[in-house]
Length: 238
Image (cartoon, rainbow, N blue to C red; front, side, top):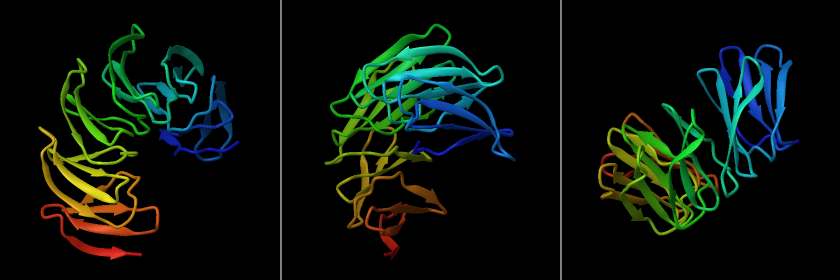
C-alpha cells in the first residue's frame, strides 16, 4: 500500500507508516523488517520517535505509542477527528492537530487531555512549538498561537485563505505559506505583520529560511527566493 509520509530514521532503524494501517520498523542498511504493528486506520504522517517510543497517529483519529525495542503497544489515545499530521512530542506531552479543527495536548504518562482548543477549520499540519508557545495554521485561514502548557490563546491572525503547512519559526519570526499565493512574515510574539510577498502560485508547504533568505515552493513549479528582512524578491525559478 501507499506510503504518503517521510520515514523517520533513529540510530539504525527506519520507522514508516503506511496506508495499509501498519507502522513498520526496518533495518536501515538492508531494509529487512524488524517488526510491524497494526493500527485502526491509514497513517498519513511521519512517526515521531522519542526516548525509545514511537508516536504515530491515524486517519481514524487514534494516537499510538509503541515501545520500539519490544515492538509492543504502550498506550493509545482517541481523538474525535482524522489526523493527517505528525504528533509533536514536547516533554511529557504529545500535541496533535486533527481535521475536525481540534488541537489537543495529551499528558503521555496519564493519557489524559491536558488541554484542547477548537479552531474554526480543519488542521492538516503539525503544530510548531518554540519556547512556551505552540503555533498552528488552520484550514479556516487563521494562524494561532497557544500557550503550550495551558492552551490559552495568545493571539490569532487572519491571512485570508487556508494554511495547509506548518509555520516556520526563526529568531522570533514566523514565515507562513498560504493558499492565497502569499508568503507572510509575522512576529512570533504578537502576530504583527512585517511583510507579505505574492508568489503567484499556491504555497502549500512550509517556507525554508537560510542565509537571510526565505525559499517558497508552489504547486505550479514556481520557486521563489525572498529577502527575509525586506520581503523583496531575490529570484524566481519556473
